[in-house]
Image (tube, rainbow, N blue to C red):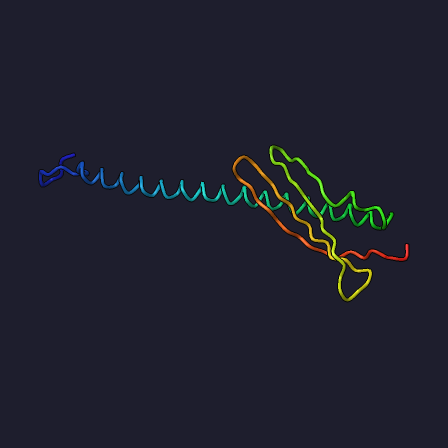
Length: 132
């Protein structure tokens, strides 16, 4: 378009190339941030699944202890599958030094998904009466 002074109004090729370069850098940074967020979301999902599994296994152990305090050992380790992730869990009971019937339950959940792996540890206390 020609202005009243006789000069063309518009952008030069260099201005357009610089603006495209700036927009490209901005889009690359946004995409990197998105992939980072997706990775964090996947880790968060794995942690949620391990905590739910640990809570479920500790509840099963608590129920087994209440039903028969002497035969709960079969609930102390195992594997579980969720999608394409295999979870291995183990509950280790250790007696408390101050209280005779109190035991600390340390639940470890390990998982493997392709080349990614992880581990989470949860703990709680159970009362296992000795007189039964």
